[in-house]
Image (cartoon, rainbow, N blue to C red; front, side, top):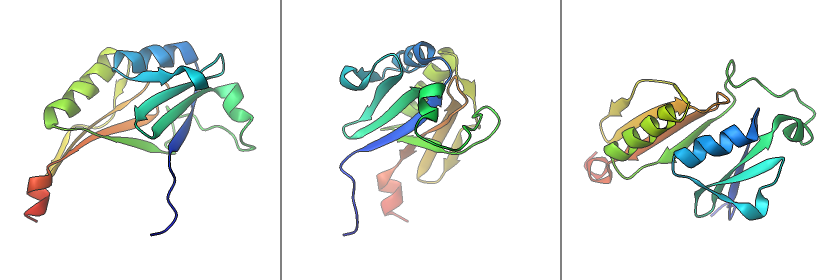
Amino acid sequence: MGTQAKQIYVNLPVKDLNQSIDFFTRLGFEFNDQFTDENAACLIIGENMFAMLLKEDFFQTFTKKEITDATKNTEVIVALSADSKEEVDELVNKALEAGGKPSNDPVEAGFMYGGSFQDRDGHLWEVLYMDEDALAKK
């Protein structure tokens, strides 16, 4: 087996850290206080998956490149798994109620169902359910 990381940290620049914390808290996510301060918040996505929400000026210290405006350009789409179609819709609806924006219409493609939203900074998030029984029949 090739290279494998034990954990993944996706770094995302945010304009207002407190608003971002509020947004993801309203979606039901929690934060790791050990890696959260006035410049950054460590969003716990899963057991070994995290998104570091970094204030834009702090994010800039990690790169010599210009920070893209996620409301106008797309650099990454963060995809999360869900246990059911209902869970997909529930998380997307929570995101919209918390101030997120719609991204694409829900997509049903045989064994897969997905919904999507933009967070307050315009980052794209997909939520996907894969029906393993239907996939096995393919």
